[in-house]
Length: 286
Ligand SMILES: [Zn+2]
Image 1 (tube, protein in one colour):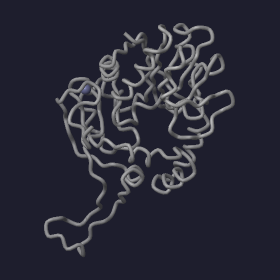
Image 2 (spheres, protein in one colour):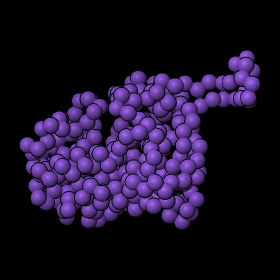
Image 3 (cartoon, protein in one colour):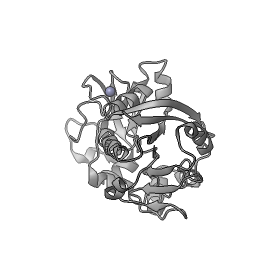
Image 4 (cartoon, protein in one colour):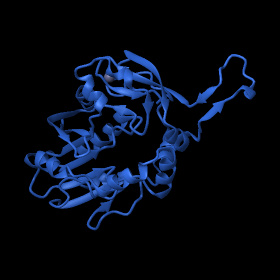
């Protein structure tokens, strides 16, 4: 993967719109160790006017599938630095210093999602009574759908945080030994530089799982992408980038899934209590 995306990370089209944007200081500092500064007259630059210097990046918009994304694709070390002890004490302290009010919001995020019951009602018809569940990127396991009905509850996560009672952490190399009925990929795809590579790994786990294995994916349906449904120029309002480096439309998700042999069987759109909206799909392997 090149440092800067040259084509759409969902559909691979090279037909992209581009506009300048900034990488938010929290992400720039954690991932790249870049801190904003002020260019003053004593820098002695002949052709550069004084002003604030922030990490410059580009917003890209795929004309084919509608994906809006950050051009900069972090490498493995940068991702590891950005997500080490995700939402833990050090993470929270730096982020609250740069984005006052974050710590309070973080407590609510860590406390768990209120919409899981709705997700479970959506998934119920596609699953056996007591499904074997793998939550890919599932953190402590607390937000895994069907966790109280699961015959097996596995979590694969890089955060290294202790899991809830009854939840087993697994390594990717061990996955072919298990036959999962449900794989969950919730709120991961919007963070990853190479969503296609991740889906290829998931599709290969589904190949060795139950023949009726289902994948549930869920991503934020960002306000910008909701307005893009009626305003084709909405993408150009994306002037800053944070942890979410991919803003999906339904078309872009469908295209991404299709390229890895995964077919959505049903879609859901859920409004959360805080005004955010999520987009979910239950998929099978072709
Ligand atoms: Zn695309």
